[in-house]
Image (spheres, helix red, strand yellow):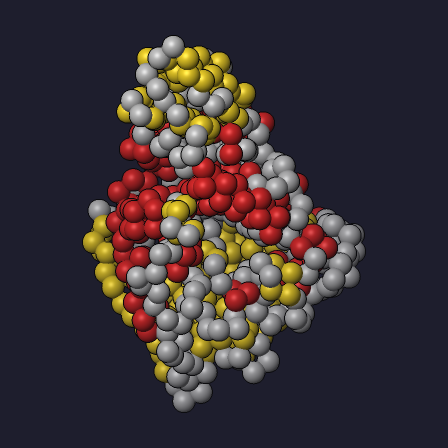
Length: 612
């Protein structure tokens, strides 16, 4: 990186012929990247060259550009990522440096005297952090006008960590090129450092990616392979990805491959699973879940629009790359063997989750740092919904000594156990410790599942489908989600349920007294604090079973029933998952479900302390 110096706007530069013109054709993309990557697997370095065509789609002229250099998160212990993460992510510790060096960045690369944008560039917008680069233009780019950049860079991959890097011959190449930040419609750059929590945000663009590797290597990349050339010294493959907001690739000499096809409404989708030797059985299951998920998610949230999807199964020891999504490509996780027949579906969960991200952040491209609830929270719910579709409600979770705890009850335990959980609708970097996972993943999923169980799963899917289809290829904010649910349910849903729970941490705490019997009648009192969610109260005893509705607008319910009843439950169908204390939802002699509720409370407390 060149030293920072003042940018001198000389009259000669103002008259230089750099590209400042509307797009020549209406069908040209507003933004386009042409990237060439040469992987050196011995030095674990990617040598890159490329071009970017960028159009000012905002309402204000721009005299600067902001680029993300996110591999520099691993270049120094002083980076924002290293400071916020404590040099670890998901239990994987930082083991070696990586980084990106921009060697050339010019405006109008075809001009006789291309303008050098590195002269006067600012590469430390946050002290100690060089994951953002601000460059100054010789004159402003007006709304609707375009510029073209030429660049060359070198990316040094770290030992696999935080979604990118190498392990042996396996190379996961992600966040590896200088990428423009998103310019919001009002003219503000949505640029931020690589945070310890939260992920990425960028504009949709067309990508043309060429990857060169040693002979015999296999590559999985975003998009569709259009060309493949072999020489004695290298293998060169060119991929095209249209209307995506990032590209990544994985390479190894030992990848084996499984293929499948999903017949979607938008056309066939070729699914390619790349996996290490010995992982065949697991890879077959990843393919099965992917194909089932393409059908399930496509039916509810709009058909997958791309012709290809690549699934990477990382080798043992490469956990730092596992469980991450990129447009048209995701990295799954799991053991090398197939886990069919076990009373747990966690082997499928990572694949279901990362596939869900193909919609929620892949197609519905929310800001993952400002609103992680919109991608991770929604994706956690659609993951649980797909697992229930595949396995049934009980086997989407665990079998605890014969007492089945479904997957959403596990997420409830994660969200509400132990220490208080912050509300999900806040920026990723506002969370500390394990609060990010508990709130953004667990609490969001528990909120959404409570709505689905209380007012019907089909209706919830319709509302979420409204949002997903309306916001496809857009960059929504929480108000867009609330508006979609208001259209489906009425204005009361966002006002009385979603906003209080997502933004204000509202709960629905219920308790019930033990049955009191006198004169041939049984009396029970149920009380509620917080949200008014409709549910039922069930009584059982020698005189049979009674189910009494508890309307949402009644805080104190007094039940006086003829007959002898010895046990009582609030919400026996377990529809509401927002009660921080589950043990007082049942009472009476030989409490039915008492063991279950005590076990769930114990599990909730433990998860609240140890969950990441």
